[in-house]
Image (tube, rainbow, N blue to C red; front, side, top):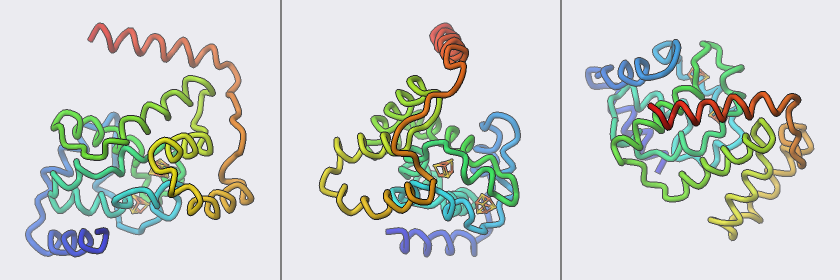
Length: 198
Ligand code: SF4
Ligand code: SF4
C-alpha cells in the first residue's frame, strides 16, 4: 500500500503541480505552518514513535498534499495516529509545524466525512484523556490501551520495539504528571467553554 502510494505521489509530482491543496491546508493551520518549506528529507518519519502505525509517514503525506491528492490525504490515518509528541517538529530542518498541520488535516477530514479508520476517533479520545489526566502524552499507556482494545493480536509483535524505546529512554513505562496541573485544567476547561459557545 505505501509503495503504491509512493508511485502515485511520484506520478503526481511529475504532472504540473497543483498547490491549491497545500495552500489551503497552510491557510487553515494556526500561525505559520511553513508547509511549503518541506524538502522531503524524511527526518519527521524517522523521528516519529508511531510511524509504523501510519498509512503514510508525514513526509509522504506532505508530498501527497503537494500533488493535490485531497481524498487520499483526508482518508489517511496518519493525522489520527499522530500523538503530538513534537519529536518531528524539533528535528525538522525546515521548522515545518508538522503537529499543527496534523490537527488541520483532522478537522478537514471530519468536515469532509472522509476519515475511514474507525479506531482513529477512539485513539484521539484516549490521547485527550491522557493529557487531561497527566498534562502530557503518555505513549506507553496510549499504545497499550489502543492495541488491547482494537488489535490485541498485534501486541506481541509490538513488544520488541516498545522495549527498545523504553531502554533508549524514548518512552516511559509510567506516566509523569506535569507540575501545576491545576493551571492546565483551568485552561482546558476555559477552552471547552469557548468551544460550547462558539
Ligand atoms: S522533517 Fe521537515 S523538511 Fe523533512 S520531510 Fe519532514 S516536514 Fe519535510
Ligand atoms: S508530532 Fe506526530 S508526526 Fe510528529 S513525531 Fe510526534 S507523533 Fe509523529
